[in-house]
Image (spheres, rainbow, N blue to C red):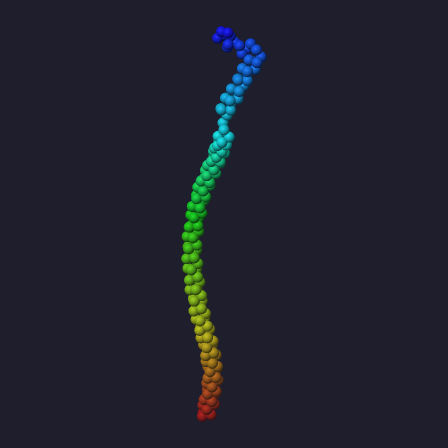
Length: 161
């Protein structure tokens, strides 16, 4: 057999073809088996993909949290400004209230003083009316006495004449 016959020989019989196909099949299986990733490699890739997905979820949650935190910070600052303004207003209102209470106390004292003066004036008026009435009665009595004395004087002057 020549060299060409040796290479052509496997195709000449069924056994040669089956042997060749078997060798090719085993080679393909071995090649596929060698090129096939190991279970650890597949699990590592799956774990890596899962970790990458989880990391993406965590990163998006962190981004959302950061945005929310910033918005909350701005809202807190705005509310603190409002609180400071309200505190200022409360202090001003308390000062106005204290001033109003002081004015009211002053007015109450003034009213009390005026009442005392009114009571004193009323007592003076009552006393003066009593004195006037007494003076009027005394004047009426004295006028009566004067008339009587005039009548006595007239009667004596007529009797002397």
